Length: 102
Image (cartoon, rainbow, N blue to C red):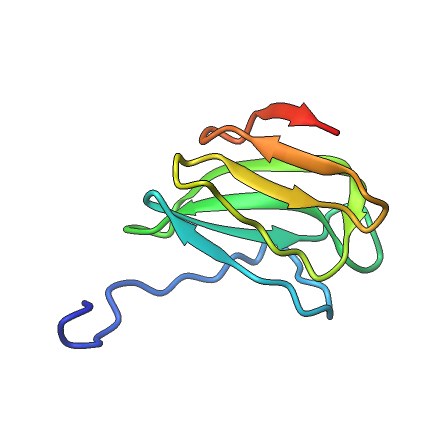
């Protein structure tokens, strides 16, 4: 709890593997968003959102790009923005669906 600093839940995700780069997480709009690797040797190629209140996985989005030092952002509406190491920019909906890619 924020008032006491006590842990409300703790969860590991053995189905996901993190890479060695300095990836960030995003906590916003009831979600914790983080990157994992599923089809690459290093870096991040998959974005995962978990419930901030329970830790349950809400969605995952696999890209065809590699993100290095994955750093998700949001304008505060639940959508998630991030970029790849080759310059592609993605915006995912609050449900993990691709809204656009540039």
